[in-house]
Image (cartoon, rainbow, N blue to C red; front, side, top):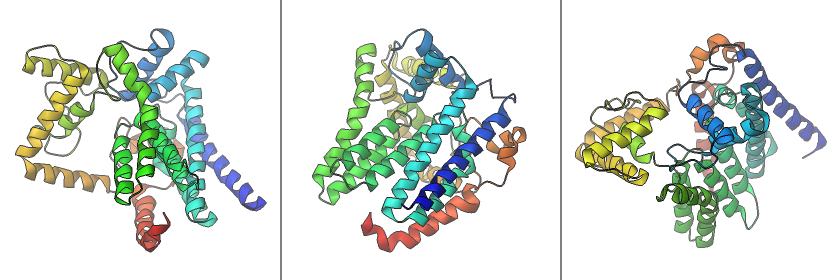
Length: 360
């Protein structure tokens, strides 16, 4: 890059961080800033327990552990300060944007990379979650790191790609599906060594959590034991809308109720105590049985979810961004949104880039 290009890059990254900082400061003193709710409350409680009581815990992980452990480390070193937690998250999110820029620059060119960077810097959903006490932003950074690894012309790039997604799987376990899909595609292309490196990189990052679960709980749980409950929540006779609806046997939909509720109901139906892996397998089996018995409903609900995924309105989880805009002028500003900017440009990019697919 030329000096002018480096200056422009630094300016956009600084602007990205500034937007996030302004959001954090505008929300300070408003509802929800110092009062975490739902998942945020669970992560805060877990992080505080890690910092002050038990680092290892006493049971297999139910929720993805990386973000709570990051909070716990921060609390241990600096105290329970929600302002500075958010500022650190904004810095990490901005670093992720640099990874995105660098990956696109290596794959394509500098102008295209700058367009991607500006979109990411001012994409309202990215801005909001970089400042929220939630794990989502770390999942995005993990994918950006994987893209950067993919763009490298190094012998170890596929191991780094797998490692990035392996770390990401400790934030969002469904990223394991991307690890397996990548390895499968590489095998189809007869790149067996590359496929092995992807799997090895991912497993190297996941293994410490698997070992910890085995030592603490005497149970084999790869990362978490919530896949079965999550699958059942989305696929059961009480959920025909495709939206989140807790099963009726749960007291409430919060994480602290889900783990206990699913375990108690599984043990009631089985008539014996169950380990975390057994609870996971029980609800996974129930969900698959329901899908097999109701294929038409499953296809219809899945299609409805696809429509919701591609809709202009981004379905909220924990925090509704339009509602939170009442408390921050930054969220009321004309930032980029999924329906008006990101989705159309992404679709156009995939269409126009299809003839160049062999470059990737």
